[in-house]
Length: 256
Image (cartoon, rainbow, N blue to C red):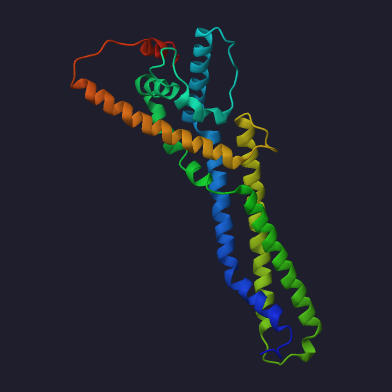
């Protein structure tokens, strides 16, 4: 076997060929998840309304404590809502938000469904996808160089040696596949940038994985808090009615 011309390069090329389709499919799947998650955030009216409510509620709290109102807030602060307390310290900001949505904006309970790809996107390192594409391109380039060398030495090979013909066909189809991935990567990058700018982040410096993780964690906390709130309502129906709190008045101040 060691007498086969270019044996080691041939072996590496064949190994790459056997895994190429699988690697491309994985990269394409990850790009699509990130692209779709970004599009969902951009298009979700429910999530936009949730952000609007958070800002409005925050400004009501600021007003009550003589703090200046804000025109925006960092998305990463969403996961601080469950630790931020109301003036009477009895409820968290997240509890009040959940109660407001349940009582006045029940259509917003579909937010998690509208952002179904976000939890998948948070598990993907977007920067790593670019590295994988670059690596695939480099290996493909090395194979092409190997093919050029084999072509130059073709007169030394046996007539039944079909390696070059097989690999030339593979390289041709692989280059088409890589062009497809590059186009998808460009489209995904554009959507991610648009999503980050939409959320008030700097597209070039912000980490999309952190944003996806923040939103995914917030949605999980929100849905869990809502489940607990519904259970409390059901329990209250079976017990004497307790007096109302200032939370209801607070929620009443939110516009539909």
